[in-house]
Amino acid sequence: MIKFIFTTLVIIFLIRLVAPFLFRWLLGMFVKKSMRNGTFFYGNINNQQQRQQEQNSQRAGNGNVKIDYIPDQSKNKGFDGGEYVDYEEVK
Image (cartoon, rainbow, N blue to C red; front, top):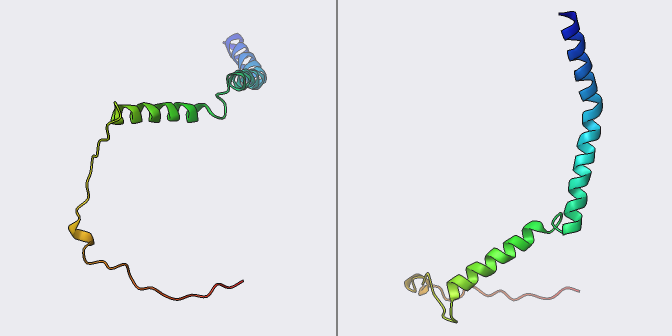
């Protein structure tokens, strides 16, 4: 029983010593690979631009314009543009 407890404590102690170095090394390798590929800072932007271009090409298709929503014109008939106020430019 004492041998089991001793070996368990030794293994836990070694893991506590080795784990930080192992994680730093793995994280460093990941960052270096991402920097080489150019995906560390701008990875999501490129994907978003590609998706947006694909969506735009699917919507428009063959140079045709598709209008999804036309607002009601009756709501804006009573609005004359508001009240205009004179102002002086201060320099």
